[in-house]
Image 1 (spheres, rainbow, N blue to C red):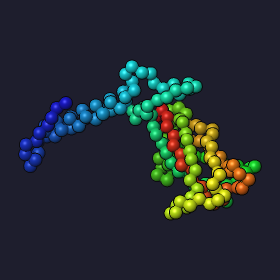
Image 2: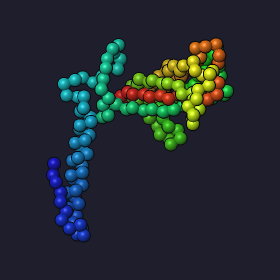
Image 3: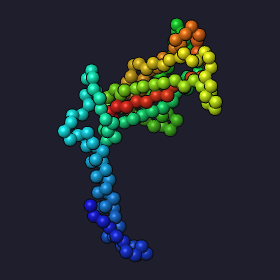
Image 4: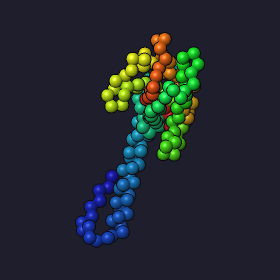
Length: 165
C-alpha cells in the first residue's frame, strides 16, 4: 500500500487529497477482505442444518446480536404456571431492523435481582427461561418455576443470537 506524506498542511493540493482518499480506500478494502475471508481458505462455510458442528465467529459473514427483555410477571398471561412472550432481533426504540439470513443460535438467561443490590427474591431463585420457535427475525420465550411457587415481580431475559448475516 502507498504511503502519502503531505509536507505543508497549509497548502490545499487536490492531487494530494486524492492520494489520501485512495490510501484510505485501499485500507478499507484490505480490512473487508480479511474479515470476509477469515474462514474461507481451506475450509467450508458452516452448514447450519447439520446435526453436529463447531465454528469460529467470522465478523464478515456472521452477526452477533444481543439484548434484554423485561418480563413483568404481573402483566403476563400464565398457563399452568408458565409465562411467555416474544423477542425481536430488531430494536424498535431506535428503529433498527435486523434479520438473519438463516435461523441463528439463541441462548438466554434470567436476571431477577434488584438492579442496585442484586438481591434475588426467594420466589425467583428457581425460575428458568427457555427459548423456542426461533426465526430469522426473533424468537419466543417461556418462563417457569422449578418449584411450586410462582415467580413474582420483574424478570429480565438477557439473550444472545449468533448466526449468518
